Image (cartoon, rainbow, N blue to C red; front, top):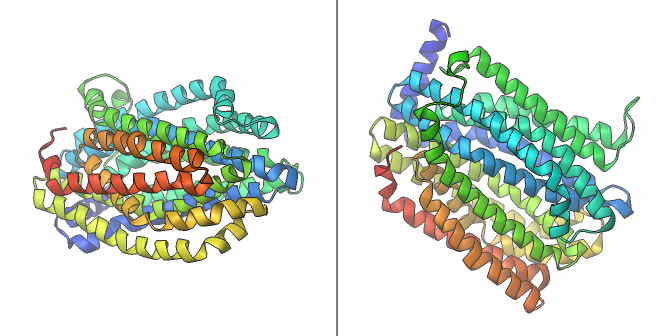
Amino acid sequence: MDDAADDAETSRQHKLLNGPLRQTVLLLAMPVFAEQFLSFCVGFYDTFLAGHLAPDVSTPATAAVGVAAYVGWLASMLFSMVGAGTTALVARARGAGEMEEANRIANRSVAMSLVAGLLFVAIILPTAPLFARVLRLEGLAAEITVRYLRIDAIGMLFTSVGLVGAAALRGCGNMQMPFWIHGTINVLNVLVSTALVYGFGPIPRLGVDGIVLGTVVARTSGGLLMLAVLARGVSGLQLLAHEFHLRGETVRRILRVGIPAAADGAIMWSGHFLFLRIIGSLGEAAFAAHIVGIRVEAITYLPAVAWGAAAATLIGQSLGAHDVDRARSAGREAVLQCGLLGLGITLVFLFGAQQIYGLMHNDPAVRAAGIPAFRLAACFQIPLIVAIVFVSGLRGAGDTRYPMFITAISTFGIRLPLAYLCGVVLDGGLFGAWIGMCADMLVRGTLVAARFLSGKWTTIRV
């Protein structure tokens, strides 16, 4: 990088560690929030496209899009094995002024991301039918789901590179570059999917297959773009041939932090997948209503992930600079700012449930099942935000084991038993099953907040 770029990076680093905390948290969070909003729009739009296909295809297509979202979540859990360790270690090194070490970590992480992506593709291609069987999907719904998953898996190889590259950049405090990269590919996803679903000029009308092919084109473009940016160099990070390998203590350090984070994700995902299986037993309309509700509830994740990323960056860098008080304050400030947004989301969900389902799906049975359950979930968005932001902050400090234990307790001790009892045994349908989901969010938010406020994470060595 030239002298002007070096000066800009030095100035940004000074502001991160010494600038007004409220303003710094906000400035770090906003680019990630914009990025998350664009990502949400893509998921929302994919569900919208599926829900407005031909009547005999719309409900099974919605199920396929929803299952693919869950499997994509599984992929992100695998990739978090690298990403969580990357952010924590890069942020610590950056905060301590050790840029050579930060770049070494970034190079090892991107190399590991390629391996993680290939591993995911190798797993999903032969096991796609298993997902349909476990979720009790039959006929056209099963056929569409299997095909959708296999096509979608190809793009995940490039998603892994994009996610881990973004984790390294955020560890350095650069939130803008991941926004531009992911923002670009999300817009591309919408444009290509629309053209392929409905046909455009010489492009044939592909229906539901057009949705997933648009996603693959976008993900591939995003991964290649991230590699190009890192190869050129940005924020002191640059891919170097002699550092791009999987050997040495740096890889072990990344995995020491990342493996518990990935285990946390795997526990949560497996619990949610079993939860989805319970939903599947309630009938096709309830299943589609659940998918619509979860897609829309992803709005809550937009600010939560954004302010969580800001907390992780500031906490990691502050600990690297040995400023524990700023690290503590950063987490609390991130939750406060995000919680205020969460209050608005709660009100929109509570009073707008009927309009939301009316927009998202044509089937009256789907609307009837989804609206009451969605109103229930609206009341638990604040605990969900608290859990997401504080977990991100803990991961930024390298504390990934304790959140893993909390996830196991809340998912398998609260969500699944209550969902089965209230939804199936007591015949409460989707509303009953979502009682278990809401109780899980409340317990997890409470336990994670207690862990963060205890301050025990400040002594963890990475």
